[in-house]
Amino acid sequence: MMVLVVTACPAGLRGDLTKWLLEISPGVFVGRPTARMRDQLWDHTVALVKDGRALLVYQTNNEQGMECRTHRHDWQPTDYEGLTLMMRPHSRPLENRRRTGWSKARNMRRARR
Image (cartoon, rainbow, N blue to C red; front, side, top):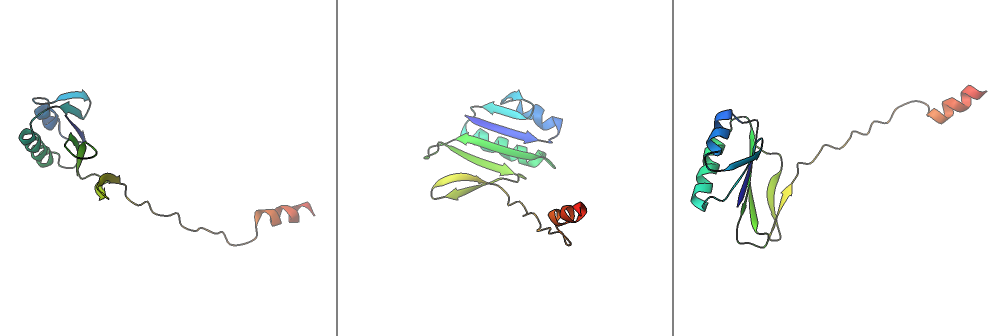
């Protein structure tokens, strides 16, 4: 079993994928191809996706029972003590924007006088 998700891809690629897989939602393809066919579909997808993104999840014989492949995707599969986890990109911390000057409470007290 495999799930292939493509985003911002040409219509021709979606048409090619529907020859072997079932499109259950726009850009989401599901099927049970052989390992060789799965690898060929992935190579074909990577070659044609251009500016879009692709994510492949397929069944395999490991502890989790699945493997992930990504192309031009922000989240990357990372091995952590034998488990494959999806590593999200580190978001930039908010800048410490301390305002200079008097506090709001001080201004309110001063206004009461």
